[in-house]
Image (cartoon, rainbow, N blue to C red; front, side):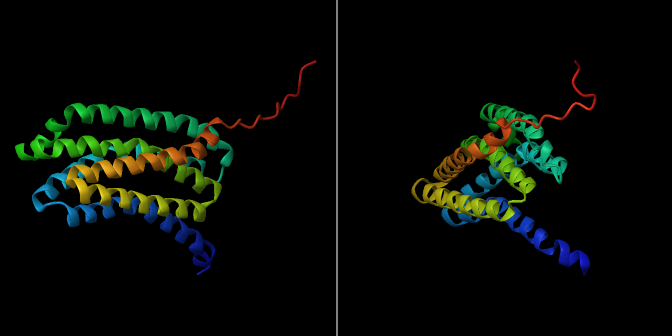
Length: 215
């Protein structure tokens, strides 16, 4: 009971924050099921599965960022300077590979997936760079103890991404859904980038010289 009283509220805040950032993938899946043809849904779902699997490594980088700096905010600047460029570089490489090799990857599921799902996969991977920024933003806010604020921002962002995907799906089908989600997520990433860059560029604290200054 003591542990529940001590960490219950904190655990709930972490859970709400996790839901606010991760639920968008399920929401987009539901939107796709409601708006696009059943035959296209299979291609979209497969493309989404491939995209989310490919982007798991940049996500784990941001996750490890919080694990390493938890309880020691003095390390925040140092680790963000390492994980942010690495995450963006990995994500950029994945995007380039996907743009070239998408038909080959989807051919594993059958020739029809390569023909009908290639465009969706090429568009969905464009969400990746925005999520590198979002994941770093969340890790930074966790380390700073600003869970409630981050959860509100992520909830608004999730709603915006859902609206973008919905509008795209209504007017242009599967391709429009992918474009709407990618554009909205990218705009969200641009809005969150300044908060991440403030930590990236902040001066590291200078440790005092234990030996003193030499005369």
